[in-house]
Length: 367
Image (cartoon, rainbow, N blue to C red; front, side, top):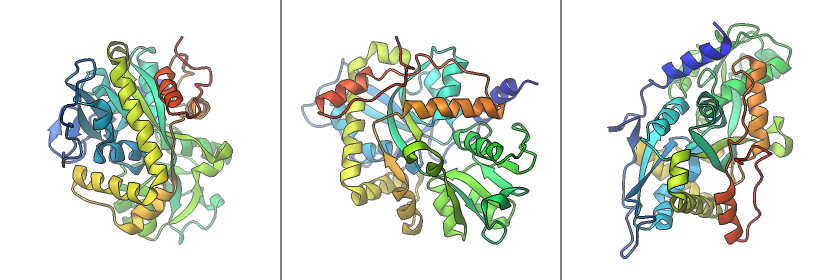
């Protein structure tokens, strides 16, 4: 079976994975409403729209969404158009929700965005903004792995076949001169696809020797005695690479541009607040994680995880193109046509109004 076909089938299977154990709501789970998303008295609906459905993951790399929901920043920007958040733990599930109109806008990693765009021949989504950079690490058992060369022959977990971290690890392994079959994960190093929720237990049991994972999973492994062997940021120019984008359904963008602009305004305001108030923002993100999942992160996990993530409005478009090239080189993706994947005009309008620098689409913008 061709690699691209196998990947599509694997992604379809992954889309059926169970989501966070909250009250199910379509493809995702509803976020708990603790009052932060209350509509202000006298507020008006934007474009007459009753609600906007926003998806995100229960990961710190989706901190803009977590904080924006928790602090009511999105709701304030949207007036009486109600924010309806939904939480996912798998990119394919969120893309499926977008395609089925179960959500309108979502925070998501680059690989699911690329896959979703290419599988629909460029018809289902647009990337309309950035959210976060960094927050991905290779954490290993220091008793088994002392140096980077010791990774050879070991079992390393990644979250999913073809997901952003899986592609990054396979690319890094190839650069070491190691051969790995991208589908089975077998080769000079064994890649074990393991959901982030169970990877810490897999590490504790010794079934994996390390993991290339996003935060807070990386810091959870460190709390279990793991050692950070490599921070992925060190592999990128200026130590920046996209880990979270903002996407929207193309039909929703066309029909409700003012609503999209309001969400982007909320995102820009949230990132500005996060960067000006890192400790308060960290606490707000953790409070929303607790509201969504029933469990907050302990300080020993939260503090180092939060420090490793940069929150930015810039989608870092050139790095998304590079990540796509990595997936092609790994044999997980046929060469994609990403022309038109970005529409940054609404974001740049918001940034200009804020007196902030505009951002670039690396030549991949909608015409």
